[in-house]
Amino acid sequence: MASIESENTSQGDFYQERAKEFVELHDQVETSVNLLDSLESFLSTFQKDLDAVAGQISELQDRSKDIEGRLKSRRRIERPLSSLLSDITISPSLAAIILDTNVGEPWIEAIDQFEQRLITSRSRTRVKAARDLGEVAEGLRIVAATKLRGFFLALFQPIRSSVTTNMQVIQTSVLLKYSTLFAFLQRQAPAVANELQRAYVGAARLYYETGFRRYARSLGSIKTRTPEKFEPIVNMGEREAELNLQRLQHAKMDGPGVTLAFMADNKAHKEPIEALFRSLLLVFMDNATAEYTFITAFFATSQSSDTVESSLSLLTPNAVVPTPTMMATPDTVTFEQNRSPVASEYEGSSRHVSGAMPGIGSVLASTKEDQALVDSIWRQVMDPVTEYCQTFLKTVLEPMPAAVPLLTMIRLTEDIVTEVQKRRCPPAENFIFGIRIQMWPVFQKVMHEHIESLKKLAEGTSGGYFSRSSPVTDATVAKAARHYVNFFNSFVCLTEHEEETMIFSNLQRLREELAKLISRHTEKITDVVAKATAQSALYEIILQDLSKGTQHSAHLKLQKEIAHWAYLDEEAKRKIVSAVSGYAGR
Image (cartoon, rainbow, N blue to C red; front, top):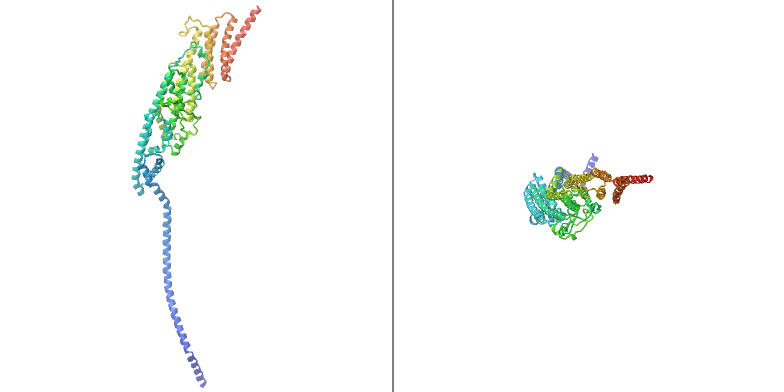
């Protein structure tokens, strides 16, 4: 018992001694519990805060996605919107050019920009901004059309007022330069464009009419100084029996220089009819083709600005309508290798169209409507010119000209038609071809008259050329033979192709009549030797004259002709030898 009490006493002391520690431990435990309670409260609050932050982050993510979507949408419309604003916005500087300045080079680019904006504003009528700018653009269009109308009318005025105006400079250096402005009027102010078109047609028509009237009158004056009329082969003079190669050169474009208008002032100046005809047609060709090319480049509605600009290199001036000022100063002319090969000075400043016209198809009207428009304008401008050419042609064909000059002119028309085809001018081609068609029947008639005259001479019933009582002498037959040979040599020189029915069939008929004339003329001689000698003499005259055409000695027709008459000559000489041998045998 005592031990138990002693043990309890010792334990009590032990706890008493450590009571303070137990109290501190208790306090610490309570503090820890309080801390845990606080931590539990804090964690509970932090969880709530985390939930709130997570909700805000989710909301921000949604807002971010929405903003990003709207940004992408705006980026997608940014470029079209910027382009739209750029296309419909008329800058103050652009408006100032149209409103405050006169038409000039700055207008070329300005009008192009303005038309683009005008077209865009019209096509975007659903856009309010475009509708608002539409009225402003329409006002500027009216101002631009008004100013351009006055500008082009002022450019046309020198053409109308004076034939001395250098039309090629106005066309190539000015009108084509501003052709894009006229194209703008065609698209945006067609009424004004039509008015300007009529104004140009009237001015150009008067210009060409005046120039060609004076030129044709000068050629007619020169023509009266050398009257050449048709004479049947039996009535032609000795001088006409000579082969004139100089006159035959007028059958080609590449030949002597053309006749200038001022030459008519020299009363002693004379030119053969084919030279005058050639001058007129070459002047017509150069002016007609150059005018057609200009009209195509300037008035054809399908031409783009690039095409029109490229056409400037094709309209290099060279042949122009004869004018008084230019006629007075022929020495001021400059020649160019690629001009029409006539080696001539039409007038002071001439205009040229390249012979081959490479690439000219690029400036031709691309549609049938444009082609019809260009042809119509050309005819309106050039109708007076074609009338003067037709009038001059009538003076050439009435009365009938000689056969060789007539064929020379026919060959010239063929050469010119070929050149006009290269220059792509259908109306001028048709006109020249029509002239050619008019000349062939006259040629046929001329040859028929020659054939009939030989036939009547051979029959002794010349009826107007020779009376029945007039004897046919050796000189008469020899002269007819020389004229025949001149026809043949001239026709060979003028004929490149060996098979030309109309040419050589007439010569064949003429040769047959000449052979009949020689045969009937020598039939009167009873002596065989004298008869054969007379025939041989006439054949030798023909052979000698045929040999003068050595420049075409390779021509098959010439070789056959020489062979034909050489055979007849040999036959006549054989008869002479045979007759002389017969006399010697007696």
